[in-house]
Length: 214
Image (tube, rainbow, N blue to C red; front, top):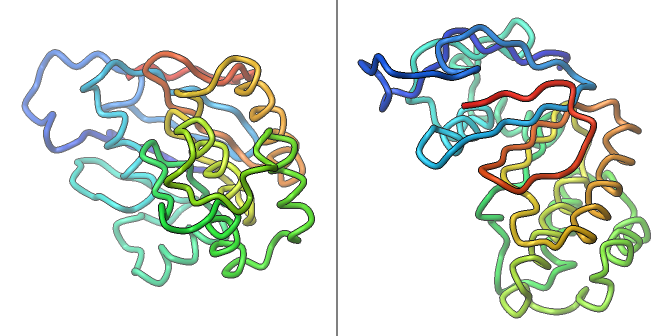
């Protein structure tokens, strides 16, 4: 997938409002593979809705989303599943990790589906992100910032055209946020993928090509 085209997109909950000032809602916008985007939003402006629309978990919106030339409303469950495995990777704001599994198991359960990275590479990422000693710790016993790093590693164990990060460093100090951004960008560049980062405040310091304000 090379482009995601947003045509006059608007969450249904915002229909009828005349006070919307946004770079995205009710606009035409193209997200291109290989570029970096920062989506800035205040609470209640639809950031979480936007992420859910792009990943196919919600379709309660007016307008149109195109993956290249395909209207996402026409995608089947099987097609969405393939896209989430081979084209769109996500770090969810709420992380969606399995608390009863270990940090490594949370990553391997996805890597067993994609068969994309070696266990050695995954262990190297754990070490690079400062959680090499947490491989066998249940996620429920880890801090939220440590869990965010596990979620990032899980997002990287697949082929991707677009990487969607919903407030990925909200619980990280600047040093660890910088390390995570550098680790992520090495993989992103190797795949030529686009990155879409959302933020209501603190965000990854990256050379963004475009800032989009909700």
